Image (cartoon, rainbow, N blue to C red; front, top):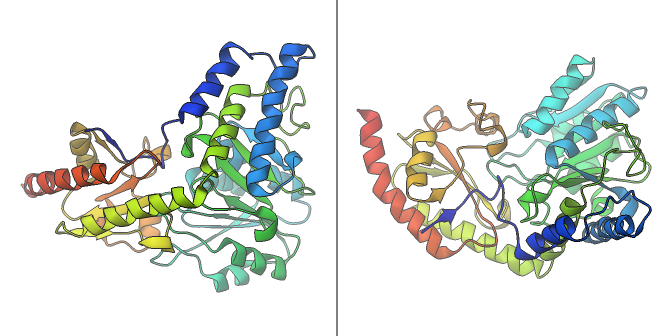
Length: 384
């Protein structure tokens, strides 16, 4: 039985997504900037995708900017906003557990002379709202906080964070990395006080290589890519019609019968956590129910290196992650696991199991049975 439990890294595309991507590659393949009929047909796909996505956020269509994915969205949100607003100040606040596509642009801005404050998190992965309030200064121009942590599934209180930011300094721009949250939560940027929101298509059963950045009307931001002036001069380059069309379909599918989809994901997560309790020497780092994201289970196994376990499971056609797949080619201990205060013996013994809409309880049972079979052998081998 093949069990794909790495949906926070990437998901299998929906059939409806595949169909529209193929159609826009083989039939309606024009350049959306062209003035002839083929170009106008292509442009219509872009417009429809933007309309769908804006609808899921109750946002204006002009506030949706298509990108190549989550990393570009985060880079543009941070670097573009910092450069556009640096006359107002050069202080930025973020957290110690951000994804590399947030952390690394911030370190780049630090090299340019910006001052970055990284807030610590508690054992549940949450920042201190008091520390946030104390960190905001008159020269603070940007705060960036991830909605859902990609490793342990911790959910930050985004609306409360925004209230604190705006009460202390109304001119501060609030960016949210929602790459693990979009499709799993009903997100209303205007109601929640979000100015910038990053999303990636391949986390929601859409195509790879496409995402979007929500930019609230009035937010000053500089483009990172210059050229032909596409997307209102904010992101030049020939528009990715198949990607945008596929992302639009995926967004529509995820928010159709949304409550039922999330109830089922939560049920799978809770079932997995319950069954992991049957295995000795196991520590689950994610909360049950609605206390954490519905799709992520972080679990540590005493006495077994995560990479060894990952490949042992792979041999049984069970696919998990030993951390964030976006940085898996750069080995090292996770900053998130350190940040939540995980004991030393678990830091290199943690895997992430993440669910998508195609997973079943039968797959979980197979995974648990396989773990019960593998762990005693691997533990004896590693002790030896």
